[in-house]
Length: 128
Image (cartoon, rainbow, N blue to C red; front, top):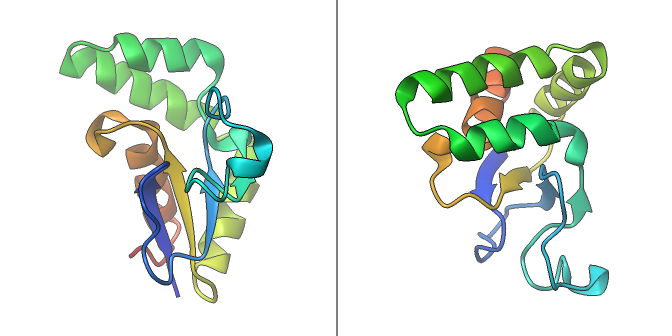
């Protein structure tokens, strides 16, 4: 049992479990009925996405320093009580269930999902 950190829209891996979309907005031009069928996500959970201002900051981060500033700001958002409880819940669930978290970004290293991976690992989550 574990969490997989994935790119939304990529083909599903065997045993991936429920796919959770941690994105601010659903995919454009895709009907709600097609989200799961087209390998986007089964559940949309924007609460694990950066705020709109931080999304803009991440997309504009051209240097390592700018990316580090984004990471600090996103970690601060994820330190809010509701976000901490969600991360704790997902970490606990990873001990007993298979599921995945994802975003659209092609490069995980320059995506908030890399930070989610770290935050979950810090909580003892089992990550595939």
